Image (cartoon, each protein chain N blue to C red):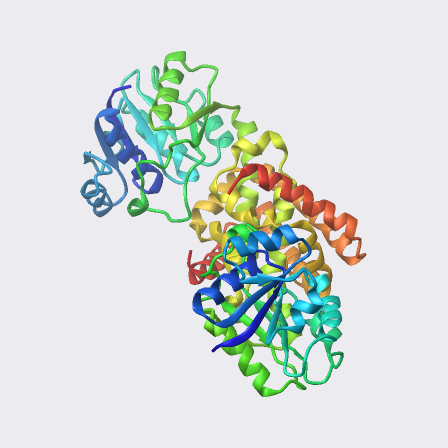
Length: 280
Length: 280
């Protein structure tokens, strides 16, 4: 595929990686960045994440054939709405947020004629955020969930799928709420649990941690504001997953308290089976 | 340091790594292995983990100046007691188990005159178990907790500390129960929580996991029987840590349910602070 202007709103880890990958693969005539701070945009250009930049988000998005909003989930709706007003018919807008239901619903039938929004969520990322950690291969072999909208033209969906595939990703179409329920288990609950583990460690025990603790809590180094917004956006599904987690933990506690080796073994064996399938 | 015979009981990841490191560093005149299966011992010799082996554990330990028991925590006491009967005065015995209180107490004043047991716990390891994954550098820069015993000769303690240091580790002396309470937070609770997360993932969601889920649950691939024994050995401390974890999780739930952004942020920020100190 070959786009005209690809606009990236928010040139952090995800936005910077999209820009870098798109430039290296020649997916757009021009990769245009926009962000809140000029210094960030200058650095992004220096590092080859974008070809050029504009500080005005509306202007930057209005020049796009495809614009990807890589900003916190609680900023996406407002940014899409305010910048879509400047867009020509045929413009395709998407985001990279970890939640989809609330964003998709808020944007439904709210855009100017011919301007299409479709949700995306690349299941890639890192607790190492920011421009400097961007990578052209971040999406290679990774899954990107795209949420199709009933009212959207099939050509827009085809273009978005082709875009992510051109970055090396596999695309799966999902209903936004089904996506949110799934990532509550695969990403949001694990983050919350990791933060809960890390948060209760007293400083006197830092030296006594090893690889297991570091692995288990790694994601808790993520940005608190980004994650608070994700939890709030996906509150019901996260609370549901937490509930299931707490019930199972109580089951673990009872097995341990009553010294029931078979029950402990069965819980640990079930976990190992799942984990072995996922690979390292 | 230069030992006579170093006997390793159980030539898996830890035992195999000790043997390999000791041989490469010339820490013993002979590294002698013992294990339940001859095939394992043959493979360990082939891979350079040991110089030689004996199937009879009593005989192998009786020839040692230092014997390290790298077997599951629920096997250590019986194995030490049964093989110590064959040992000459001056023999030093230790183990590499993740729990110390129960083992140390069970062995107190139970050994023949002149035979000393001191507890060790190298804070190193991997969910990738077994001989094949052994590494000569597994202990480099890692912490090994050693539990001194009041009745033990200072020379025995000095020898054990020098041994672990010669493998590249740093040694910390700790009371066995203090050790167990600490690792309940730094290792056992994280393992239990990781297993709980992995165990509740339905197969339909496997594809929707990414690096975060894999990191957070990695340790759950560990051996269920080994871990069930660890949890049982350290039951009280693990239940205490679980209790604190559950209370904090309930705090998280309330912050999320009542949509209290400041409280959510504060929990996530505290976690990030801890995690940032620990490094990647």
